[in-house]
Structure formats: C-alpha cells, structure tokens
Length: 115
Image 1 (spheres, rainbow, N blue to C red):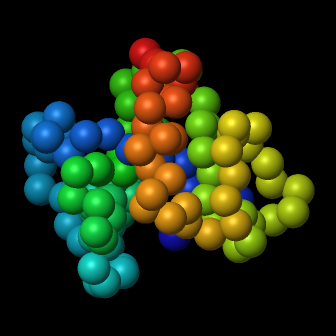
Image 2 (image 1 turned 135 degrees about the vertical axis):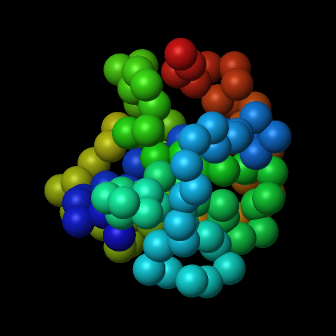
C-alpha cells in the first residue's frame, strides 16, 4: 500500500483524533480495517484498525513536524525486506497479541519519543 519498504504510522487515541478539513475516502482495501485516503491525490492518511477502536493509525508523514518521530515498534517483519530495518525497540514477525499492547503503551508513555 505504500510502494515502499515501510508503512510508518503513529497510533494515537481515537478520542483525540479529528479530521478538520475535507472528507477522506476509503482506499482500495474495503475490509474491516478502514484505510482512509485523500480523495484528490489518493495519499494514504490514516487507518482505523479492526478491533482497535480506541486507536487511529495516523501516517507519520501527515504530522506538521515529524522530525521528532522515530519508530518504537515494528510489525509484520516476516513480510518485510531482510535489509529494511527501522531501529525500533520492539519487533514482531506479525502483529503482536492484544495482551502485549498495555505493556507497549506503558513503556512508550514512560520512555517513547514525544513531540
């Protein structure tokens, strides 16, 4: 979906997310996870992941200032290129099980990179 070695997103609380202008469109995938795109240029903007209604995965490139951003956890490594590494503290071959998220969230809150 990115034509790249990476798909970089930042998980933010859904309660703190709002589209301020325009009306994003569902992209090419029409499954339970909803991937929203700009209807004009088709850029991938954000995702509302299935089963994780408390989060929105915002594309890091949508941040006004992304200089502070660094990967904290990477997923789906088994699908990635062997040579493409992010330097993330945590790495998973697929998606981590839901019971891992509270620990990841707490660790990120304590020591993750923030704006």
